[in-house]
Image 1: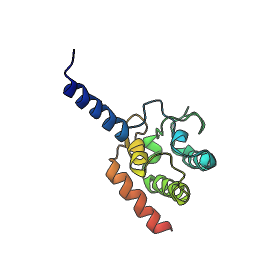
Image 2: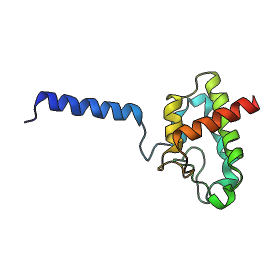
Image 3: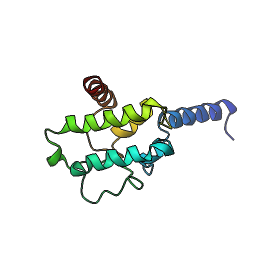
Image 4: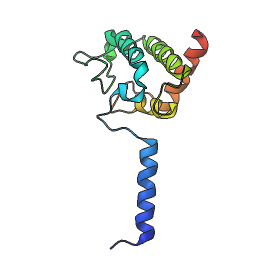
Length: 134
């Protein structure tokens, strides 16, 4: 039988991990936003469709944004501008079901994207694009 303090420490660690990474490899992009913003997710996916790998599903079944890196060369600013526009619309009326940090963590994780960029760099690039566009 485990010591109570050891069990409590393990439970606190699991809770902290769930707060930091509240998604799994099966979490869909559309699950991170409120229902009223499903159209914005579909617009984002359609806008990024030329750069996504073949065989990626529609916005309702999309669990990851895997880009064709050959087509993405020199087009990262386009991806960042699409994310900036999406985030500006969703953020305007609290449409995210999670925090923005968790949203960027989702997009920078290897299970959900192959951009190969850190969470901090992705966040800075998108915020810089928001300042430029809006």
